[in-house]
Image (cartoon, rainbow, N blue to C red; front, side):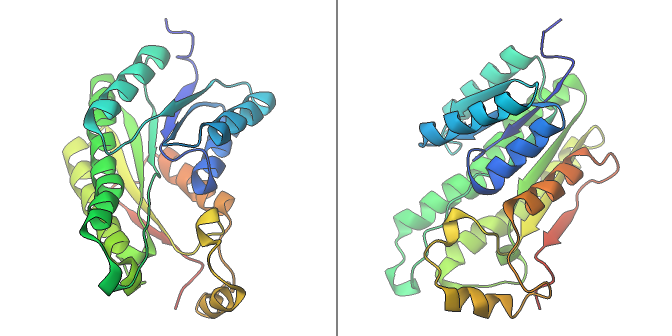
Length: 247
């Protein structure tokens, strides 16, 4: 038997920073082996691996992979399957945004956002899903955004469109993979991550006025929801908005 088989294994795309890093830590805390996928920042991924392995008795793998590239995804999934023998959970967290005015939006940027946020999620669901089908179980959590539901920002319309597509993918994969594989979706609102560095204090305060809890979420709070959804045995085809009560 594979030496890792007694512990559950999770793949987290974009798993080295922000929500992804918090999610990596939380799954490790709960005795899961963690596969941290990243695109370019090897040092950050390596540091997170060292942090986790120093605290928890789990195995951590870091894998560089552009999830919008099909051949790269196939290789990554095959390598993970070969090492761990199974894949229990998939968290599709990787995503990008390139905000600009409508006048300044480039088709090339729009396509890149769709490639990563939407096609990347599709490829991960497809190829990890094949592993889960063969093993007879699994749980997938896709990360969308309140931008796909009720928080519209014209300068992010390409991001918003990609995240709306993630909700549609969730429904269709849930139907396709039932009953043994559960597929759910988390839609966070504002979260305190590096992506907000360009926001000034006035902008943040203005947004907080529309949130009943009066603040942005911390990455760990989103990670806790992801873990709950991933491990809840009777939750399927659900779209869960987590925004502190935006109104």
